[in-house]
Each structure stands twice: as structure tokens, then as C-alpha cells.
Image (cartoon, rainbow, N blue to C red; front, side, top):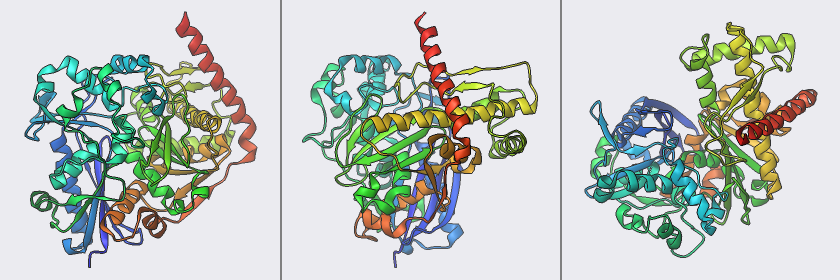
Length: 526
């Protein structure tokens, strides 16, 4: 009986696979690192074949650990970061460079090489930008393709397929280059609510009138919860599965997390519209759903049916959150390599200091966390971070003070994002947290206390994998629909309410946070 699914999640530094039963129980999770090449601070590249290798490795490892045979697997689903894979006309890597035996053919989501091209898109003022917060981000695919066409014309001339990373994985799994509605709507300015989808006049205006032909981009898309095809014989052998396993439409990783934490209420739109998904990792994504489109500057979306049928999705976010904390450990002398163990050592010491001194511990230090630009509410990838209140202290406790205040700043930024969403028609009631931030008790508590919202933390070990499993279960017919899969597979959760005693100090911190933003604008204007 095929009563399990496999979920594969590809992040910035690793691929993860989990085997999930029809009730949503994650039986096992396996991890495998992937290579991220960083030739400069504003660039990041993957090798698609290395990513596929890692996916095969973790799927085989998960099967071996559970002892389940392929005949027990109904479907496999993939989610991934919004990285751009470049293939030639034979489906082979179109390498930006060759290094250490790898063909780096994938521009990572965090790559900001196309800042000028993104600004050029924004200056057009085209109506298509209304579905991207009126501002084009360099993390979107169109400016990256503009950069490719202008700077690497020899690669453009040989191109055959342009794919979001999740779509590349379903292509490798099936041999079918169909694209997901989730990926195209979110990252390619594809208008899924309109016939034809592509804003042809906009593409022509930015010099990408030949993009669809060069990249094999279709007019039709596959919704979340629907199949692409069954595994090809080659992919089945590589994954340790068989050709009766269905491959679900790919998903943006953050949107898989939103499905994982909100799938249980998706069948009740009134409840769904009052919930916000917060996916915290290297960066943070804040996702809400509505029955009608809500527009606003720096709000990515509204995107139609990007996850749920009939629903509009809006996303805001912070470009560096876990990535900022990693940076601080590398940067400060008492930090070191940002391993999970090192983070926990710092967190434990901060908790001890907080118990002694209270939440105003280190409040002379103030941080603007925009070390990789500001996604929302300013939508400006060129903005930079700041730290005020520094001294000559280079002790471990000095590191802890800065780390703590960076955590506070991340939570203050979240409060600002929620206020932006509220101003544009959303009613955030509860925040459903998933991703690596659930392992940081400092952030979990701050998210509640700074925003004044209940923080809902699912008990599953990985809600992103759970969301991808829901997608796979619906695509295979293991459950009758995506909402049915969400209801049947949803995880139990714990709730962290805000502490009213902390409201006053964090309100003062928020006023300082806004003042720092004003001062930054003043300095930048001089």
C-alpha cells in the first residue's frame, strides 16, 4: 500500500528529506550539505547537479533509515529556495563558471548582482510591478535574466531552459519541464490571475521579449497539490524509488512552510485570513492570505493561487535574520564559526544575563538589522545596517550583548512588517512560526513580546517538510485535495503568549528603532 510520501526541502546550505505518513507524522529527516559559491558579498551560486546529488543522497538515506520499500511511497514533493537554474538546449548546465569540478549554473536567491537591472525595472512603473510591491527586487528572476543577457550573451545564445530551483528538481525527477504556479507567480512576475499570464509589454520594455523562447517558459502552470508526472526511470533509480511514484508541483520553500503551519485551517477561510505564517531561517518571510487582492509598497504579491485555490498571497520579509546572527558570530572576536552548538552557547549565556538583569539588559546598544538590504517596508536592497552604543568591550559577554540586541532588532523589524500589512488590509491575529528560528528561544519570546501576538509553534520537527508532504499527498490522491491534506496532516502546536510586563521596554526600543531609521535616511541624504 502506498501510504507515505517523501518531502525534499532544499535550502541555502543543505538539502533535507523526510518521510511522512498520511497522518502527517514525520518518521525521519536526513540532511546533506550543498555547495554555495560566494565569489563576492553580492553574489551566490549553486551547481544544480550538486543539488540533485544531495537530494538523491538524502532520499536514499531516509528510505534506508525507515526501512520502507518504494512500494510504500505514493509521491515525492520538492520545495527549494528561489534560485535560478540555467540549462542549455540539451538540458545540461549552462555554467557561469567551473570550479572544483562543479558547473555553477544556478544564481542563488540571495544573489544581488542584478541591483541595477532591478532598479531599471522599477523605474518603468509598469502595472505588473503592483504585484510586487511597486518595486522590483534583485532577488527576483527577471532582473537576474536581464543581467545574464547583458553580461553573458554567449550563455544567453546557448540557453534552453530557465527554471526556478524547485521546478528544476521536478524536471530532473520527471523529464517534464512543466512549471509550478507557485514559483512562476511568486518570482517571475507571471500573472496567474490573467489569461496568458505573462506581461508581454513589460518583458519587451526591459529587453526580455525573447525570454520565454530562450528559457522554454510556458503559459500554463501546475497548481500546488497537483502532479507534474510520475518519476522517470532514470530518476527513480537515482532516488531508490520506482516509476509509480508521483511528483508534485514544486514549491517555494517559504510557501511550503506556510502550508505546513496553516494547512490545518485552510478549509476555513475566515480563520485562515487572520493567521500569519512566519518562516525564519537565513532570512525571514512573513506570509498572509486573503480572499481579495491587497496591494502595498514593498508587499510581494498579491499572488493568486500561489498555494491555496481561490486565495491571494502576500509576502513581506527581512533579508538577513539568521544570516545576521551568523555574521555577528563570525565578525566579533569572541564569536567563531556559527555552528548550532555555538549559537546555543551564546543563547544560554544571554538567558542567564536576562535572568539577572531583565529584558532591558544591554539596552544602550541599538541595531538596524538591514545588513543585506531591506525587503520590507522600504523595499531597498541598498540599505545597510547599523549598531550604536558600542564600546571597547571585546569579551564574550560583550558579544552576547550585541547578539541579544540584534535579536531584539529582528523582532522590532517584524513588528514594523506587521504594521505595514495591517495598513494594507490584513488582520494579523496569530503568528505561526517555523524554520530554524524555533530553535532560538530568544527569538520565539521576542516575537511574542515585541509584536503583542500569540506565537504558535508546531510540534512537528520540520513544518516546511510537512507542507511539502501535504502537497505530495494531495498530488498523489492520498488525500482528496490540498485542504483535505492540510486538515488530516496538520501538526499539534504550542502557543507562546506575549508577556504584558515587557510591553513598555520594547515600545521604547521600537521608538529608538524608528529613530535610527530616520537618522540613517538623513545621513544617506547628505
